[in-house]
Length: 508
Image 1 (cartoon, helix red, strand yellow):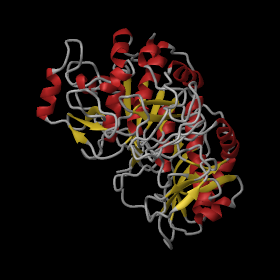
Image 2 (spheres, one colour; image 1 turned 90 degrees about the vertical axis):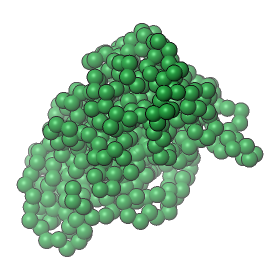
Image 3 (cartoon, one colour; image 1 turned 60 degrees about the vertical axis):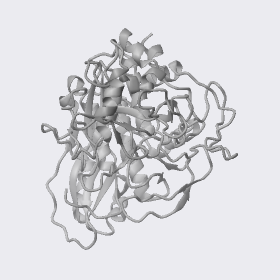
Image 4 (cartoon, one colour; image 1 turned 90 degrees about the horizontal axis):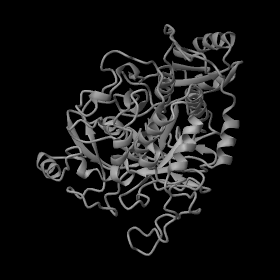
């Protein structure tokens, strides 16, 4: 399965964001990033057929000449997002990237994968635990007249006051949260009432497919996006579970590769542009862009990936879309000087490398303006797996903790219960689950403050959060060694950022 945000996610301190913004360059302030598709070129296949992103100036003359240079270098133009200057191309020319980087008007260019294209990455921690019929009956027996049938197992809703918030304001139908993920099963009875098909698509490969059902998961094993969608906006309809914002709409933008489940850059670029151009107010990103957990700016391929995805997310931000992303599940300190990455590239043979998180970025979570979310358990303590970092984490939210934070619920399950494909329900944990809780609260805030900009929404998210402060000790396994070190004070710190989101405060 792709690198879902049960994977790992990071955000940066202000100085890093500023330096990243400067490194990435100016994003053109355009009104539309509508893609232009070109016919494939005939090329000689003298190497592996790879996908590339080519980032250019945005004037039509430059884009036109660069497209000609792509063909001349043995490439095929797949799609052009002219208003942000991003061209997706395929080529079997081993020197394609190097040749394109020398073309006038090209600002960066590089391969988006390390293995050849085949015929046509998330952040949950561990396998799914499906709710059996017997377990469901036990949970339903504990239901109250005002709750959903399975809500007794949803400790996470109570932890952030979402159950009480729903009675005041369940969210506006004018607000849509797009789940950029493995697809969403909109036929699920808890999702169907709030699903927005007109704001959904399949963006795999870089070109949006809006045909009916294209946004749905490939198989029941691609459950990640459906689970995330339920956490955000499962309807309070007397059927199963409830979402944090059960009155808002949710859409699905599928970006996971059908063969290996990975989230390649060109697909994510497409998703951000599609969301922006279809009026989406908030996106949830519970994954990191494959194949690199951290993209280093001194590598031309990785730099091109950061540039392309950043152009797309900033384009969406300028059109009014707020992005939230999971911090990751590696228990990495993103404010440290060095991190050992043993997982990249994840589409071929990983090579162990030591990276500086101030120079090598987890995308999209470390991009400027993206809200980075860490995970907590029922005790409002950082989950054992959650990545953290002072000045990097913006806020925290329930993501579950099956080892050290066990709730007093019918199932005694410390993970998060939500919707699964084929009308099922299941438990997952990860920062993948934390980010949609925060996205749900952001949707409630947008419902209360419809004219709030993405920057204002982010400020509101931080203002309503409850910060427990750094714990006196974080020796989760009791072996006498600190499992992570929290830096900072009661207002802002490395474990929780500005604090754990609070849905009840959001609607008050």
